[in-house]
Length: 211
Image 1 (tube, rainbow, N blue to C red):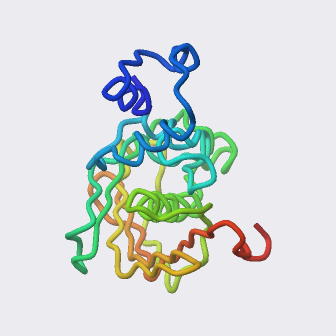
Image 2 (cartoon, rainbow, N blue to C red):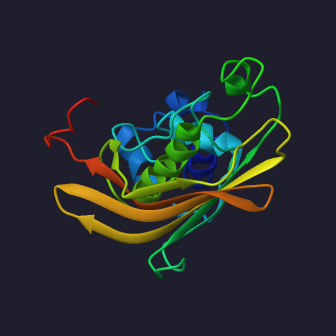
C-alpha cells in the first residue's frame, strides 16, 4: 500500500486512492495530512515510485526520477543526524543483474554501468534528503568538487550500496545541500565524490541554465 494511502487511512479511513473523491477529501486536507506525517527512516521500492510521482512530498517539490532513471531499489537509512559530519546520512541500495537496461547498450560486447549513472544516484539522494527534511521546490543538481573511480560495475556484481554524508544545508531563496558520497559494489567502495551540490528552487526563483 502506498504511503499516501496509509496516511489517508490513518486520518480519514481511506482504504484506496479511488475512494478519495468519494469521501470529498480536499487538496488542502491531503497536504495537511501529509505534512504532519512522521518522516520515515527507510523507504521501499513502491514508496520510491510514489515519491517519483509526487505523492509523498507533493507536486512542485523535488521528486525522484521514475524508472529507468531511478537508480536505487530502496532507501535503507535516512537521518538528519549522524554521518561523517554529524549533519545527516542517507544510504540506498540497487540490486544488480545482467538484464538491467544500461548493460545492453553500454557497451555491446563490453557491458559496464555508466559512471554517470552512479553519480546521478548520489545527486538523486541529496535531492530526496532535502525535501524529506522539509525543503520545498523542484530539485536540480548543481555540480561537485571531486570525483574518483577506482572500479567498475559489471553484470556479475550483485549489489550496489550508495552513501551520502551531509556536510551543509543552507536555506534561503535557494535550499542548497552539500554532501560527500560513495558507491560500493559488493562491499568494495569504487566511486568517491566530494562536495556534491543539489539545490531546491522555490516558486519564482530562477532555475540554473540548461534545466
